[in-house]
View 1 (cartoon, rainbow, N blue to C red):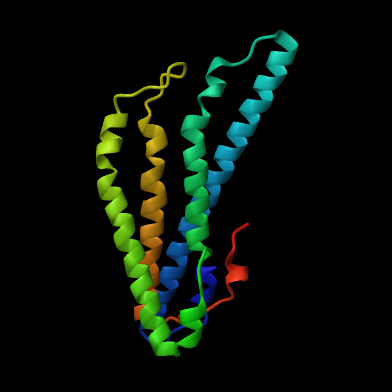
View 2: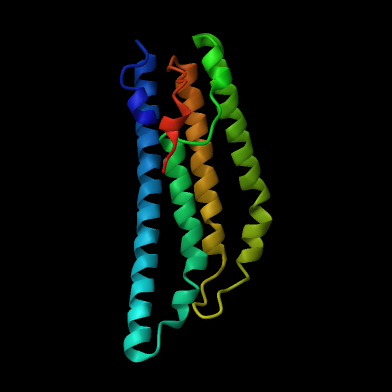
Length: 187
């Protein structure tokens, strides 16, 4: 986990900044986990109750078929944010493995900055979708579609913040890891 990396990094004045980076990463990680677990629990409970009602009363909860349109994107967003906070992703580690520590740090900084720029671009370009979804409602629930699309803000905002925190950590002397790709899979 990113927060674990900062424990023994840095010396002098940069140590508090590295510790802050670790705390921010941990908080974002937990927010993703909480969102994912809450969404999964609610979807499972509603599905279970709906099945029981259909088999016992021959009638289910009408809106139980629509709730996934709001909760599934949030479940995915929570998982993406937790994975990003833990430094787990799909990656090819050949180039970082060939580089020395300084070059690996600069490559890592470039990658994290690219991720931050992509996240900011997605957040900026998703604004028309978010604005349009304010006027669309789910038929049975009456909930605005914007609640599902808001997961974009959480996912890409969280990943972008993690990328910026990692960039700062690396600039203040943090280690540029070159872990084994198999160890970084969040499955």
